[in-house]
Structures are given as structure tokens and as C-alpha cells.
Amino acid sequence: TTEATVPGDTRGCGTIVVKAPCVLAGLDVAAEAFRQLDPAVHITLRLQDGDRSAAGAIAAEVRGAAALMLTAERTALNFLQVLSATATATHRCAERLAGLPCRVLDTRKTIPGLRLAQKYAVRCGGGRNHRLGLYDAVLVKENHIAAAGSIAAAVTAARRVAPGLLLEVEVE
Image (cartoon, rainbow, N blue to C red; front, side, top):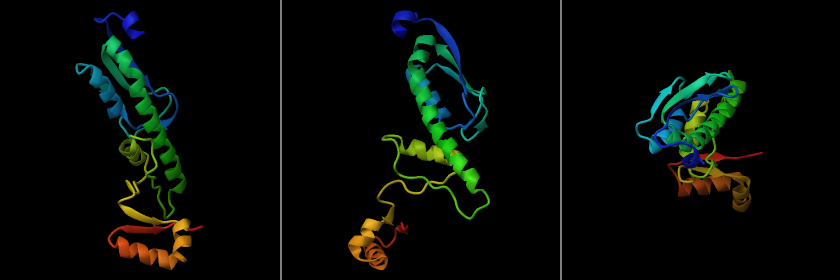
């Protein structure tokens, strides 16, 4: 559609407007989506990742080749929406826990290909990263406890196999 309707030499400008109150995350990733198609694009970020924003705020302005901007727009906005949603949900949880002796930790269960980006968004929202994968900690769950015969037996076995890793036990 863009090739059919927008002459190649047409210049354009656009704004990325926040549609709902949120914590922003992914502005640099969104900007890179435009740069990948048009290295000469001019992007002005008016807000930063981690900023709490009201609806109607202008997060960024983009100027460049109109056809390339339109081609990159959906990818840029998808990144910005997914990461800002993650940051916003994290922030809501962190706010509810304010003043309590606990913190919001993320999961390694993320959208395929977006693990590092979503973990970054969690930090933007006030959370902490827990673990990146199965290799950096041992999590003993109820099925492990049942198979080992007891919590103590499962913990002892895990410590023997992975003595230097963080060990957590999930209980009900």
C-alpha cells in the first residue's frame, strides 16, 4: 500500500502519542526500527524509558522519508506498546508493595525473542530481574519435592549438583 500511494521522494513527520497513562519502555528500540529502514531519519525523544506518562503526551517525533516511516511504524509501535505494557504492569505491582519488605521479580517466561527487552522493561517499571534462564539458578518445585521424597532431600540433591547457584524452593 505504501509503495502504491506514497511517492518515494515524499518527506514526512509524525508523532508518537501516548494513548493511556503508562510507564514508557522501548523508545530506543522503536527509534531503531525507523533507523533500520532510513539511517537518515531524525528522531526526537521527548520522553525517556522509565518515565511515567499521561495520555496525550508526545513521546517522540519522527522526520524522514514518508514511505520508510510508514513501513517502520507498526514494528516501532509494537515494540513500544509491548515493552511499555510490561513496564506499566510491573510499576502497578511495585506501587502496591511500596513500604513492604518485598520486591517485584520478573519471570524468565517471556515472549520468544524478547526476553532481554522485557527484562529491561521490568526494570523501567521498578521491578528486578530474577533469572535469565534455567542455567543461573535452581528452583525446586513441588514435583521435584515429590520425586525426591521431601524438601530436605530435594535441596540436598540440588546443592550437591549445583553448589554455587542460587537455590529457591517453591512451596504452597
